[in-house]
Image (cartoon, rainbow, N blue to C red; front, side, top):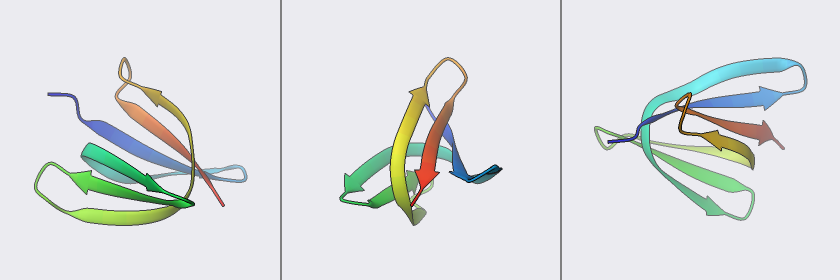
Length: 62
């Protein structure tokens, strides 16, 4: 199973906001992140990159 670590970039700052993400749903500027255990977090931004090789998704904060 592919799980991602989600990194939020805000200017020069990089923050890991969630680990073990299995689903990402984009609705306008909102991105809903769902974890392997059913947890959910919503962030505002746009997806810059998803890299399954490194297991990271990069979101640019809006």
